[in-house]
Length: 405
Ligand code: MLT
Image (cartoon, rainbow, N blue to C red; front, side):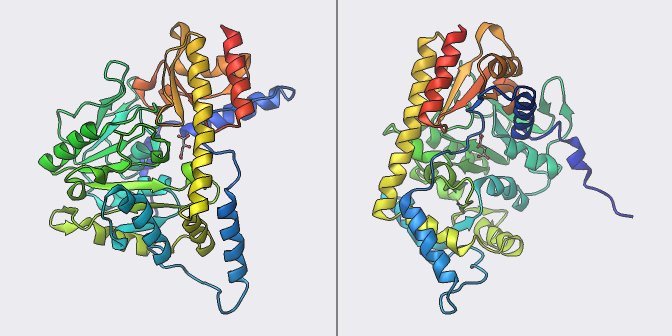
């Protein structure tokens, strides 16, 4: 008799962005005349940059010719992309990463969900609270998180690291020592960024305690301050304690095209085993490589014109984030983020709950954001807006919100 993985039954409700999507659909169906502005999920809206489109076209043409047609991609990624990544994302910042340490994939969401597989079933995880839900849910599915306390919104076997206004949305080092520490900086959802010395503290803590940091740097392109590191490997000793996740989604607009990579340094050894080899083994078994045409598109991101066009896109979204930040401040909201991040984190007005404010904004302003409570208990009373909309929609959304007060 077959049995299901009962850990899946422990998952509360549906995935955050599915719930948000359903609520918005229902509202739109009931109110077809309303023009809803979506600043909820962090999905990009600008088209892919011309350099990327050019590379895609050329790669598609190659696939139509016998001599240049490609079948399965190398499962760890084409060398042309892995070396462009090592050169442009790391060497340019003084970090030496070899191409064997670069693992190309179809998304940082899947990498962040899959990485836990190479750790022991009883590994204790620590997450920021609020947190990108994938880190927790993927560990729930693996049976690591214990029992869910609905009232507290917490799992019994997870170490939560509250990120609150009091600590500037930067987590304190946990008292109880975890095996696996998930850090996302610049942070989703709060938009907070870690300065180099703060990240160095985490690296030292992990090395001291033989913990591994899963460092999600999906938003590094949005860093504007000089003392904020783009990669954890800018910190001394990070190669012996950290893997790093990167994405082409948020910088170059690949949310629908799917491309990302993970760095697993050769020096990272757990239980006497190099994680680089384990991850390669897992990747080789479960993944047949990102498509050639998409990896060629990724390579174009690092061309001179690609870099310029990507910087313009990031600048466009950051201007939106500034419009949100400044507009809400002027309207009397308490806001943060939006400086090294496309996300703006705001305190809900008049003590409203996060979901209450979500409904209020949807119904009164026809603007969609993401309720902070959906990211964890410390997100209650907060709300996230993204800079990834169009400029016109963003400006109009803020005007509509300002008119409410
Ligand atoms: C978000 O809105 O938090 C992100 O778009 C989710 C993701 O990148 O998967």
